[in-house]
Image (cartoon, one colour):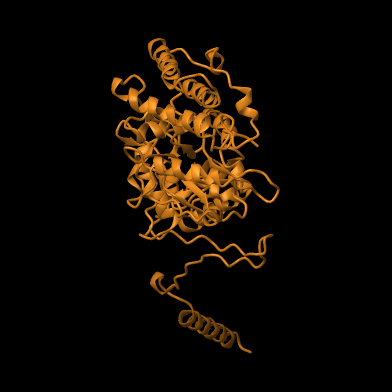
Length: 463
């Protein structure tokens, strides 16, 4: 074949290929098909047998200019870590910026390691923090100002507002609620707890349940009520009686107008553990209530809402805490913060906002406003609007730890009045306020010793 004919043949072949491609594939951005799922669905199910779909893309997430990986630190369980990895992958697909995760297994380890990571040569750009103590960081110095989503619940934003600046994007929260075992209420013929309950109603119902002397199949007694006995719950009771002990970073232990409210809150513990004898044995300091309720050995429980994620198959319902002179509860709020040391703050802010779209931890509730409905998320949002948000700064941490211990012992001790114990609390607070010294559990008054009889009593006071 002549060379000229070969050239013409090749040119015609190239022209045909170009025409085929032109009419077969999208030619502009607008013609590219849209998809809610940017990666194929997993071909094999997870170990539990259920495939895990991709997270829904965030349509407002901007594309980011090329740059190094964004470094993120957080605490999470292995299962929760997988969810974070999925979120990080989805962020990279949507923005073009890769994410490197460092995940600790528990908050205590994380709180210890985070400052060291920040001081290293490669500090994180974004980190998960708790509003209770900002995970040991100084928000004014360590954290950059951020802007949460407009759909974020206002009270959760307050948790991270310092000096008029928002220092973290709220992500998730947990609030104390009243849980109830519906089967025991059915058995007793008593209506379920709801918003109309006061503490007086709770007392009456607790006594009624105790009078029935319910027991589980093994013959163990069913307690009427399981409650926390620590500083946080005392603080809630103080707020409900008119004056909290602490909200955000403002203490009220020295307020003369708060005396009656705070002593009234101590009377609550004395009443339930010394007089009514309807409560389950108090948990140890730093121990979360729920042990008896999870074993179906208590009819009522006051505990953080995220605890429900760890309940076995218990038939339960939940509602807001009973009301005193006002309604209040306590909340823990976590959020994503941008470090001032980040060399790419704009990209880090975009990532923090992206990660805040869904909770990190199982059982926690998103800070995004839910649709109006009768759901657990809506109930938790309602409680959050009434919640205390105590901010435990480093200088106050020893006092709170001491009060956790002493209030727990007070609930189990006979012969100590609320007034005398409250005088000791105020004395410790004044000592710290005046001198800046730390209080510790070793400073426990000699008279504040638990009564062994109460700890080991084989009636409704103990197993």
